[in-house]
Image (tube, rainbow, N blue to C red; front, side):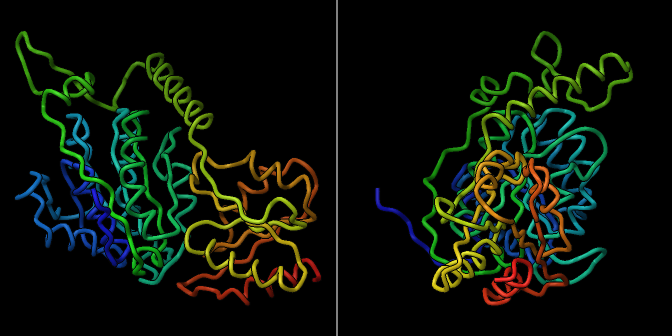
Length: 360
């Protein structure tokens, strides 16, 4: 079968990948800079070809609760939004996590706090990786750096969500959502039949009554002893994810004297900075976390043994740097360079920031 190659935005790639994965339902609400996800789905009209439900909800709160209901039946359901919209979804996300349901949430980040700006940011790192809602829970968080990864991570996110019965999030900055690149679209998968869903998801609420199978899906438990056992089960799942699902990419780390850590589109900018630095005789390496949770602590710790210092580059005031510092067990300078408000640094700015910190 020939590959289908298209030129499209990252947001459009999310939509096309969802259709081709065999997603059962998308429930969302438009907000810049991710509105093209919903717009593309509406234009493609997958309800006529695959039976996929595409519904513009009345709000982000409504959309995440529709996802909750769909996920409870074992369906592959998703939503997408941007930073303030995802803030409104946090209660629903924590319900989905506590009910141990698979779902996919896409957050194409914009600057904040508050309504902020419509321009790109990476300032939802804490919200995504530390559990933006209440309680002790985690999301699997995937950070794409290319439009290709926007497409690829739809399938990966759903696969991980169903494997561990927990929600997953694609955390993309607005640059990746809006930029256009060549994309090899994923292969088409058929939507599962009701019989396949019943077989694969025995925990799902089927709606049958009487002698039939009927599950009650809820995040509520009034008995504290049982709720503690539930939480212990959640933590065992998260520990398994941390053992098995860490993903990252390394560049020039074999011989580096310094290390840069960056995710998403900023990692691409930093790679150009590093290539220029090496022309000047400065050996810098790069680690790009792909899973922001689980975070690649061990990979960073291993490279940290050989370097003189680390620079963390983000489109925020300094959030991922806290995890990088946790990864470094010995005394070492770990500095931060970031831009906020939707301003994106160029490779020369990053290199100059590096030189200012490390006197190169």
